[in-house]
Image (tube, rainbow, N blue to C red; front, top):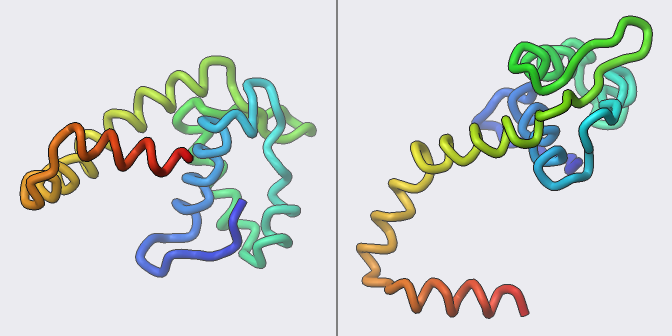
Length: 121
């Protein structure tokens, strides 16, 4: 996980987002344990309650489960659930602004595809 925080969003939401990214990117697989609250708090120099709040949101969303005495673990089906939710969030929240910019700049699908290909190389 990265160590820099965005001042425009609560840290617990940013922590949650980083865990979501780790699951979507296969860094954390279904059944894997999340890093302990204490370790994350110490590594990122945040309050353990902040980490706990992020983890609790993931548990409330059925992304992770608490196993008493063992910690938090990624649930089966979590990646697919997150994939669908993040896809919908992107289309609802981010895509409209991107679409407006594409239209404003007169970019074509060929322009976008070429830019995407040059980024991969």
